[in-house]
Image (cartoon, rainbow, N blue to C red):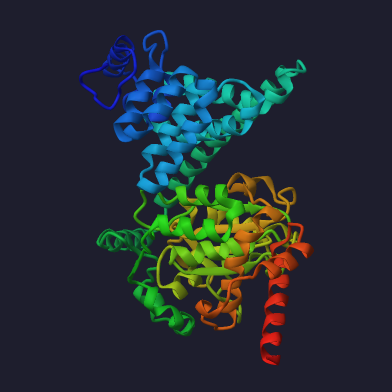
Length: 510
């Protein structure tokens, strides 16, 4: 037993001592995030990586000792369980450290078994995202090591299913090609940014002075506030724009607050109760906010069959965030109008994310895009998909050139949630900018859990006090179950409405 750590008992003292020696040894990657430190560690110099990780886990979660020790002894058997326990803890403890520890456990514990394909994908995505964020801090040697690592995990992810058939080389080819595209793309983007900076430096001195004054204003804003839109005195007093900006005066030239992150335990419990069949999606969404002071979700696409509850889930997430929302119907949207219409047109209006900020009176509302896969493909007046590319990139969103206001607006704090029945119609650049989450379809086993929230929704839509609505009787549940085998929540809602209307008619007769 180790004397210096009472939380770690039952492990061999020799192993613990070696693990501590490894942890205290000089680490060439000390400045990198935890996941990359473990991924790049030299096992010849640090042979006790799993023991070291167990010590880190028990420092923050001593109650996971039994599971951590079981993982140490049989990593291939207990990796998924340990990772799941740590990620659940990240929500309850509101700390992102547990997510990083979970990914490290997957990294060190997964074997190449086909049953863990999804777990391999999580590690590959986490390493790639973490590497991209830490790229500038890394040496050329570390970058080369990391490229090999990312390619290796991509090969495992893409090739697990075909290894047994002798087609591993094909998987390796595609994985390497995709990684190379990423590296070349990053270089091209860097060059474009450099060229853009040169152009910016050549702008007239007056414009540069305006930008400097705008920057000074933003820097004076207190924490939790964002100056979304700043107009020059000349433009603000122009007769051409004074009527246009009148509805937006309360967010122009002033610091707009950011909506704080709500109580994640309450949000998670509410969503899990209303969408019991989509708890994995709920936890993924909630993890975006762990450790964050203000609401900001990753651009996310909910992919699933019609009627599965995607749109209702998206609206409920927005409701519970408390940051306000703005809905866009992808199937009937007028192309690029989401990005605003030019001031020269009679119907000129700012971009939709700015209007969402105006309505919500916070700088970080949610923009909800329903059926984005059904957006028009005509490009006569611009496509919704193309406009979204600029809005989803944080760099361009921070200085989005609004065509109606004729100035840059800061939309970088806006979150985007979208739904689709199929991902194939979407262009690849748009797919690359969103996280795609498979939204499950409920089954008959979920019926009893779905009925209470549908009952509440029925009452809320009619302005009724839900406390006066009687729960479904066994006979009513049986009647609904006989006509709903699972699938569409929309159809289930119609059945619930029919049962409640029949109940009301029966009560009126008596």
